[in-house]
Image (cartoon, rainbow, N blue to C red; front, side):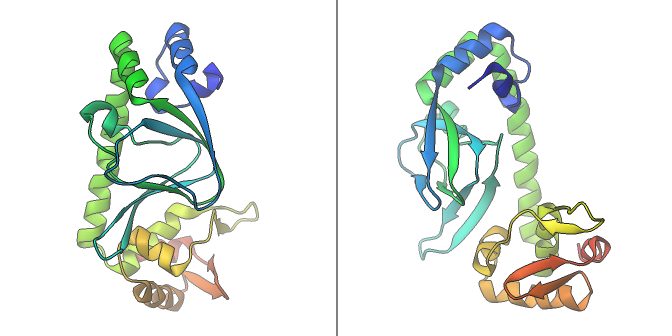
Length: 221
């Protein structure tokens, strides 16, 4: 890991060269295949992680096995920071969506670095505030938005310019995966797709979702 790569991580953006070098010396690398579990909810926490490449699903499981995806962490995203400070177990499960390379910092090393460099603590406070806003919006979505509205919002978040004046999805989820992200049953996703297709927002091409109109999606929010 290079110092300029550390600078791209929200927690470390305001650090000087000396602090960045101390962090770099504490980093270890993890490589995982698609579908591999990094850690499970409730087991002793070993480290916090930064995604170098690939994607990692952070999720909870109900007693009957239903999955609720909290977030999909992509390149540059950090996760499992909470146990660094409360010394508790892992608060969720982590599993790769695709092959991934991660950087990790062990809990004891991160605690020592925070104590030695107060600027790191300020970085954590800023990032934690952003995550609190994210999860507040997620609770709001689950409480007040319809399933169709939640699906439309997720599709908008996943969309990017295709270079030809249109939009395409950065990745395709199965209906079950999408249900886990928006917090509903798989069959409800099919109904939401039909409603969005009727409104001219999307079209279904076999197992792919094609975005037809950003404006039509936005109207469904």
